[in-house]
Length: 329
Ligand SMILES: Nc1ncnc2c1ncn2[C@@H]1O[C@H](COP(=O)(O)OP(=O)(O)O)[C@@H](O)[C@H]1O
Ligand code: SF4
Ligand SMILES: [Mg+2]
Image (tube, rainbow, N blue to C red):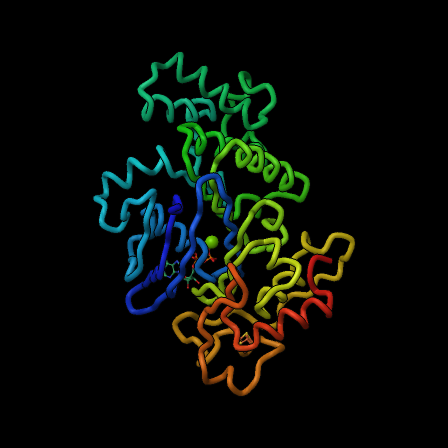
């Protein structure tokens, strides 16, 4: 059985600086994958590459991107543009920047149906109100006449979701969809996305907070400095991470630590991708680091069926993590 989306060995570069260094992941029909990692780890670039939306200075230097069997790197720009919207959709952290401030929200949602479905004005307007109602915007018929700045952050994110889902895509990429929202609204948006999953929508959900995505995704890829350092099923990774960085992300996640407020940020900062440390890129921050880690780069390897880690001492981390009780809280 082939996956809906298959990304393998993806390398994204700005000139000779590689911001994404050989990342692979797959998303099956109706499945949800979480991509997590601190800011700057290459999460957005990885997904923008899939959608053909990389910034002009960036290019895909190597790797394969297959959508439902089609090689997207070889496909012409028109084909990719059609797929985007029809089959692949994306929502971003900051909905305000994606909406036109001078047009009403209803007009902008209706525009999707007019342009992409060829509906007339009245029909498109009706579909817009329906789409807004489906994502939980109360009194949508009236609020369709309001402007983006009259909506709260959470309501604006709902509008973005309504627009992304308008054409019934098969995959939704949600890049930090709840980062700008307070905790209650965050939970509402995640609930809304989970309803769509249950209706069969495949999803890639990106976050810097492992806790936020843990309950929304079946599998997870943890990124550090442009690479996948751990991957596997959430149900396996979350209770007993196989990479020290994943342990650190869990300890640093407010939402992963219900009932335990002692959030411990990971010490130090992510490296400059133009000047990566030798050996394991995480070694300057790693509590498990040894001499070998400074010189020998750990490959991503299978540490259990369906689980991989790029740590020389993955097995030790799994057992230590479990006994230290970092996981799950
Ligand atoms: N427009 C750009 N120009 C130059 N470098 C960039 C640009 N966008 C991203 N980068 C580099 O790529 C890295 C990864 O970016 P990104 O994928 O946006 O990270 P994330 O989404 O994980 O926060 C950044 O740390 C930065 O060094
Ligand atoms: S390889 Fe070494 S430095 Fe890298 S994560 Fe594992 S223990 Fe830490
Ligand atoms: Mg990002």
